[in-house]
Image (cartoon, rainbow, N blue to C red; front, side):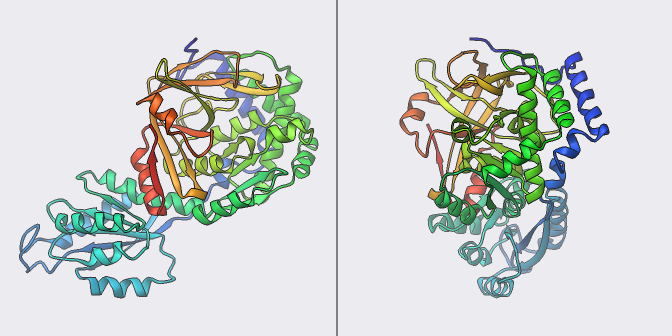
Length: 474
């Protein structure tokens, strides 16, 4: 076992040369143009529209916070802080106190395209928040502490018990409020997104569930279209991209340069598909197609690059993981890492194993960790990646399982990068709360997606606003 070498933030000649190679390719018009649009240009930019409802009584009434309270100044302060903390949300504010007012507003808002409601309860007596929470529209209920608590603690739990798409915030930190409200922006981007699926299998039930549950479009692309683009890729651009990968790698073990160029050509082909369809993610049935000689280059290095750049490349036509990765990118700004987890109860460890992992686990603008270029483990062919990921950090591992309207989630702590010849190349070792309980409760398939950081609350907000069940594993 080896921890490997993680060089987050540490400059090196190799990384410098790799950066230069990337810049040269860009300036020469090679890799960048052949790959199509940049990740930034493909990502949705539209803002979420949120109805901001301030709930409070006439200040002349006795109640919390107190008679004569200056609600108008409080509202101006809150709106300013929300606009700064939620730059991808457009707020339309309104004020009210009673259920009847809320019901009239909800009727008037029908069909106006609001992504949801942020209900700030500033004072009591008031009950307008009850009608909004029970309306079935995605709602963030917010308790302005020492003002709206009586209504919040009555209406929020009741809406949750009734299965309404409601989440709540009761905190003195405006950042906690923004975290919940920004979920609307992530879900809006998800609904504006496209995932390409390259497979020969019939996956219509999963496609329908994801399109209905998460709102993104899924486009079937025949393998022949991808192969034609691969075959027609610019050899010079593919060579430049391959050299950029080689120069940044800590070592290249099995693959020859020609094999890495072959992978680079596949990356350019997948990038061209994303540009053609205006998509942000691609899921390729790589093992099935490669083993049946319907595909002639593994997409692992291409997925690696896309995930580094803020897009999504997903293995094995795994649409559940692809959609999870895309939504987590919008929620956190960080890439996901698909794995086939292995559980070792003797050491209370879970090993997240796969042949693709990013080398920029903190997002496109973050530092790069060390990685190696290896062959694909199962058949010892092609080119894949062993990433040496950061240690002593929290990982969020999850799946948004659309057919079950369920999110499965667990936390762990990264402790090692295992060097083991069996199974997939990247093996990130982590310690969960209880490996045996995790093993005994495993459900919803083998794959999971890991993202660096503790994103439990953010994922809970998303699950709640979708109206899905949140299940904590282990």
